Image (tube, rainbow, N blue to C red; front, side, top):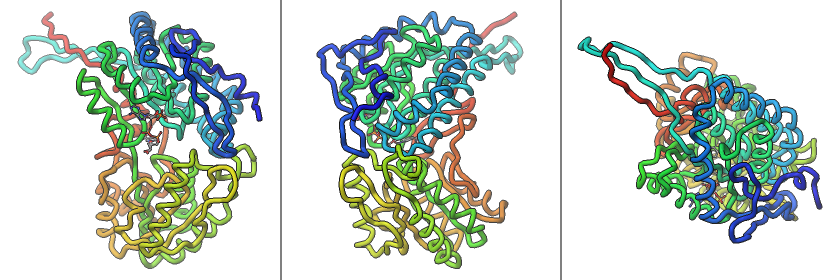
Length: 483
Ligand code: NAP
């Protein structure tokens, strides 16, 4: 089957403002997870291609850094407007290559566009500092200057938003970039490259190099001394490797890595709110989100009722092709993810959990897994130790708030946590003791382009979004001066 939104997308590499094939002519296939059919073949960058992209970004760097901030902001603003104008086209493309439901994809495009609008506004708010040295002999002048060429490596779960969350602040700061999108979802990134060109981004400022040889090309780029920044979003496992590789040239890193979010329901929580927020925290993006609630800790007095209502809500979710307007949950992204989710549920059941709803993959084509609620999960169950990355909610019961906090913090991850209580003072006190970069109180989603998104512990280094996100692309220069 052919889709107009797929046929329109350029399938080459986008380097220095031009489309081209890979140096060795290699391509790779992009698959629709709902049908397992090939959607398109795209060029697969070689090491030489990637280094050409770095050279192009470097060559364009001086002029872009010298472009007036207002003008950089206007280009981002135009990109925002184009993306909103084409929301439907991009949403369908995202559904086709990632599997998510159309409403989710529309939400992603709006979210992605907001990063462009936010950083269009931030481009003109880059400021330095002037102060008098404590000894009084001189002044301390601090300039903030663009760090230089930035390499971006993005995941498949938010193919548009994870790109704009990096491109927005980088361009606002005056940096130029090379983006290597995930191999499952290169089409959205390629379509965005064309959109940025149309919005007036000069050649070389944004380069896009999909590749089936991700390890090799990213490593080669990190070895190129022209690269000064790496921003990676993906698994902790790959992030750890890239941090080690970036160490050789002392490349500054932003790392948005895996999560294992606890979702705490205290005994006084409003259960209507808690269940509505659990549905979002678990099922947003089909559970394939780094912020997805991965472990539900519920106070014993309300556990049974919470599970009853949560199971009913999960059972009512419609599963099917993301392109169908009536579908709320699409397929998982690939066979490996489906197999992993099925294995984790199997292990949880072996370890004593009860399936309240779901618990099965759907037969036939596509990587569909039913929304699943597991009750009676042991606090040491294997499903609680890793990202599930699917529509499965394991519930554990706790007796004291102390116990809930200890369980929530018992992980090497620390991206986000969710706390539910009618007592805001108590919810804030619990939030303060949670080891995570973000906490949602009586809410199932925290992401916002204007807020600093990022993790503690092995969930990452640095922040994206808000003013903090811009600082990741700026170097400070201290000038000591007497006048
Ligand atoms: P992944 O396997 O780590 O892949 C992420 C990116 O890294 C892809 O572009 C991938 O390319 C590339 N990659 C793979 N191996 C590489 C290597 N050896 N060297 C350089 N690059 C390499 O993660 P994923 O499965 O796409 O995404 C899911 C993960 O992302 C989850 O852990 C999730 O929590 C995390 N995530 C975090 C955030 C956050 O903000 N904290 C947001 C979204 C997702 P290929 O596709 O070609 O393999």
